[in-house]
Structure formats: structure tokens, C-alpha cells
Length: 331
Image (cartoon, rainbow, N blue to C red; front, side, top):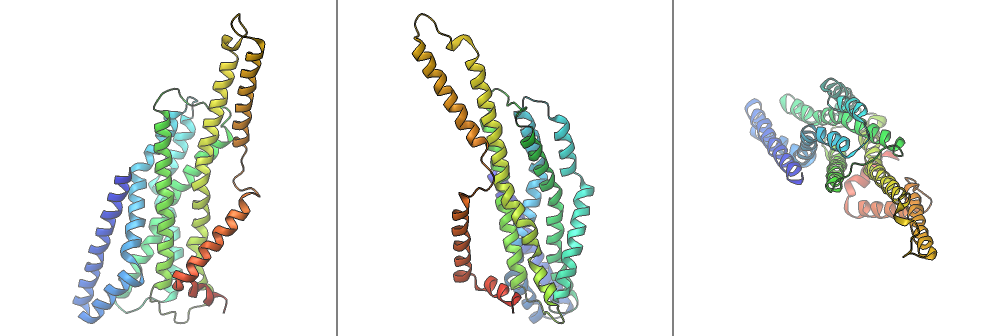
């Protein structure tokens, strides 16, 4: 799985490099060598084209090739019949119509914002940079049905976790680890691609001629729109899987207690039997306590506060470009 995402990021990066040289060659043919050099510099260093396309396109290819397996694996580890729900959300995630529709909506929205910021150059270089950057909104939109359907699927599992049983078998834990690894990779790559895209819009050499301050502020809308849900989901799916595992363990303990194994016999004293029952009750209470842990509690606020302070400190010290962008919003 890790090799798969690495391969797709690498191939997407190679595609981005080829695209860059193609744009530079056409620019040289249509205009001149100096402008071709400037366009290449803008593409690589200003728009962060190689890194952004590598991560964004790579993640899209990874999801389209591996995403179907995660629904199947979740269904396979469940003893309860959830095939109807799986089929419903799987259909949404893999609907090409919905993918292209959400891609077009996001591309039009992002395209209007970026175009009003003013692309540099004229003629082919201008449209080349525009198509390359606006296509990233289209790619992000194409991934939206997958993220929406996988979230709704886990929400369904969360609501019905008390009636869902895990299958018996020694490979169930391995299947759960595979599901966790896939979703962790998707969340990490998604957050990375979002940050690179956001930073690319800040460093891009837009002209900002007659650009309203609202349009400039809207450059941050992708990270505001997608970053919090991704961050939330990176915890939520683990929370749901843990609840199902804990509930399944409690059911197994109940089944064990209800058998004749713990009934008093000639070799066991009443004290031993009561001690065993006490241990079992303690284990169940511990599982129940973990089962009711909220997404964010008051105990998390100090840690979250210091994490935010740390991130702000890193940005102020090491990422002046991002910091200067936010300063301009409040002038």
C-alpha cells in the first residue's frame, strides 16, 4: 500500500515535469526563450507546480485504484449484514458522474477566484498556468464524493456499532490495520496537498490588478473548506473502529461469563468466582469508558492550545510568505 502511493506520487511528479517542459517548449515556439525561462520558473517555484500536481494527482489515482477495496474490507470484517449500506456508499464514491460534477463545480469556483487575481504573461503562457492551476481544483472536487461517502459510511457504522459484530478469525486485526493504513495515507496526503496548494497560491506571481480584497481573501477558501473535515476524519474513523472493536470484545466477555465456565464447582471457592466476576466487570467498565470518549473534551483544550501556538510559532519563524499573506488581509 505504501509502495502504491509512493509510485503514484512519483509518476504524477514525472508527469508534472513533462507538462512543465511542454509548456516551456510551446512558449519558446510561440514567443521567445526569455519568457519560456520565466514561465518555467513560475511553474516550478512560484506555483509549486511539480509538488502540488505530484501529491494531488497522485492521491486521486491512489483513491480511484484502491478506494473500492476499503469498502469491501470493511464489509468483510463485519459479521452483520451491511451489504446494502456498503453498496449505497460505494456507488456514490465511484460514480463518475458525481466525481466530474463536483470537480466542475469546484473548478469553476476556484477558477473565478484565481482568474480575478490576474495571471502573469500573455497569450499561451497565461492560459497554460491557468489550466495547470485550476485543474487542481477539479482534481480536489473529483475526490469529494469518496470523502463524503466514506465519512457517511463510518457515520452509519458509528450509529449502529451496538448491533454490528466482527467476524471471528485470526486475520481480522490485519484487515483492520489495512483499513487504518489506507485512510491514514489518504488523510496525510490530502492535508499535505492542501497545504502545498494553499502555499502555491500565495507564492504565485499573480498580478493582482484591480483585484478586490475579498477575492484575495478567498484564496484561502480551499484550506478553510477542506482542512478541518480532513483533520476531523483522520480521528473519527479510528474512533469508530475502536468502538466496534471494544463492543465486540464486551460481547465476547458477556458470552464467556454466561457459560458454565465460571460456575462454582468443587475445585473453586466462592471467593475465586466472585473475584473473576469482579475482574470481568472492571474490564467491561474500562471498555465502556473508552467507548464514550468524545471527539474533543475539555481535557484536550490545553493540548490543542499549545499545538496551535507551536504551529503559529513555526509559521512565524520559518514561513514568512504565509505569515505575510495573513498580514495583508488585516491591513
